[in-house]
Image (cartoon, rainbow, N blue to C red; front, side, top):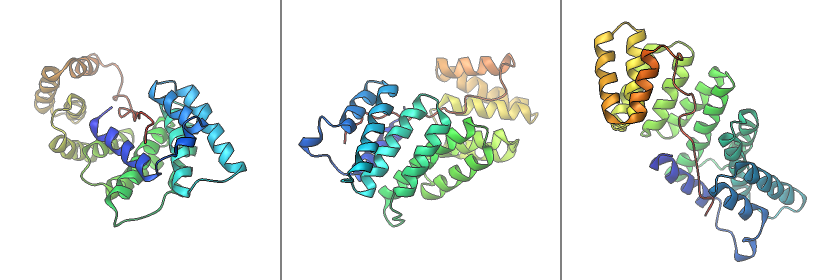
Length: 239
């Protein structure tokens, strides 16, 4: 998980409010503990119980309900249950307040859209995924990770020059990510710009083992594109 996504998750959880001591043994808190231990099946179950509990006896604010759906959606996301993740991210986004003059609120909404975009892309719904990531970038234009995600979306619909533009912006923001150089090199190769491709492949290979492995994958012709869900949003579940 990137430091950036971890920070945004903390922001989103903070927007939902802090639970009282009486809630520490609730299904919600159990879900957060399970999530922090990477027990995503257990987390999804506990958050489902918390949602059901609040539906029968509503006690939470809209923001807190949004957080429950977000956390269950995030659990499904980690389990690669993309259709279920999309449903919960959609519900969370609908419940969230729109405060365009509040940077934290914009960042939280952008995070939900980014994760929903990744889930939609996994479902081969590239058009809808692109709309989500476009909106996420509108809300948080300075986040390089979202440019990277949009590059994946654009690549999926064969818009290589546009994907290249987003990767250039992302590299200007997050220059130490070997994935960006390997992916850009791959696109340069497909565009016939072999000299530029070699330069990026060399850079990625020298940065870390992940970059070297990805370059090797491209060189051997294995797979047309990198994994669509590079960003895995994890949270300790603590508010």
